[in-house]
Length: 201
Image 1 (cartoon, one colour):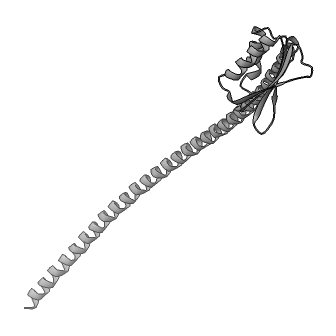
Image 2 (image 1 turned 180 degrees about the vertical axis):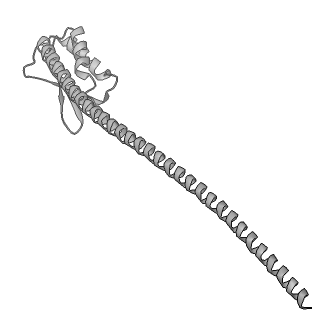
């Protein structure tokens, strides 16, 4: 049996499914001991510990050097002998499954919080819309009142205009009658003057 430590480096080797990718391949190659974890460093790293029959482990290493998940950006792979303990692939698989379920649970909780926040936003928007409807209703009432008052004012103005026209017509008639009386009196005076002049001659 041999044990190897494999370090995968790249611009993007975290959160691309690398651990599941390597677990599937190790299981298919019957690697009995496996551990895979992400290492936080200046450049992203994935540390792989593999142990088993020399031929199987060497073929697994060749796979790791030439294959990677679709979204990964792998730059280099280094391989060294390893002397420490390596968990069984079954133990790693259980641990990995638990970590993934935990991640799913955290994501689900975050989504529920987001949904709650979105519901609050939606409720606030409904309140704003209700307030806007109230404002619009008030504006409509004010507009109706304004139209009513304006109509009444126009009716009063029209009525006053008619009364003024009646007064002016009546005044015109009275003025014409007065001028008629004056003209008649002037004509009478002229006649008397002519008569007096004729008599004096």
